[in-house]
Image (cartoon, rainbow, N blue to C red; front, side):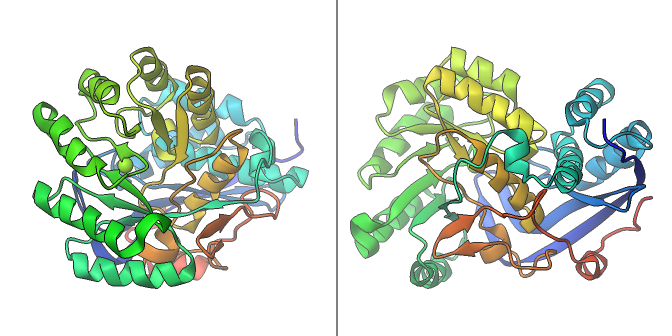
Length: 374
Ligand SMILES: [Mg+2]
């Protein structure tokens, strides 16, 4: 038990515009639509959390704001913030779904717990297994020439991992882009492919085989999220590693995914699993099954990126790195006081207690989309 009690909860809703529209197999995205959770204790500590939904994938901003304001708030007020698992169990009991709201709640509680104990979030959930990790950028502009300019600039910055989004236009466009990147950057570029459910199951194998000649490190979520047996079949017949993203959300999904060997890799995302601890449970199931993990993200500010970075810092083995690039290379602005720490193509794990990042209240006000709920 700590001597701290939750005294105030504020819920902000923001929209940060993107530098450029990103196209995905499941739709276009023009910005970061997030719920920012501010939890204040009677001792004056503030913990921050973020829910970053995507309506075609996990949920909506409005739904997650209501989840936190109406359904979770009454159970948190006056409570001891460090009893994190107890609050997570409560959230699962009183509210179905809304993993992004639950992730935001856990983030804020761990942020406060870290400030109380002087420990970083990665240490609270496991250990600081690494200080940094490679950063993957997602190439998803329908205008490929604009993408080529962005890639060239990032190459100068030291970025070497590029995941390009496929399945939103013609198959020939996907083949052309993969060929071009391999031609321009040779063996030095690490190419990954993400269909975001964009292929039809009946001809997915043929399309993926066409792209294999360009030696992608993995192919992510070629078919619809519910087509799990089709995904397992693709994994079985394709030599290139297949990653499950939309098809594996939480530990229950991971267990079924491991049972049918749905993929060679699971994308871990705190917005899918409902927080860092549940994502580590997914990682534990993957590890036991010989399935690799990868650090995925949604359309997030540097705040949720920081939480994801702590998650991936705590994972015992990490070979495929992570993609926390939004705050640096996608959004036109961020809500953090200091820039999210990406240098020379690598994401650096924050070192201050808790999440180790500070939110700028002026930025929250500037990008506000609704009244603050309190
Ligand atoms: Mg994905």
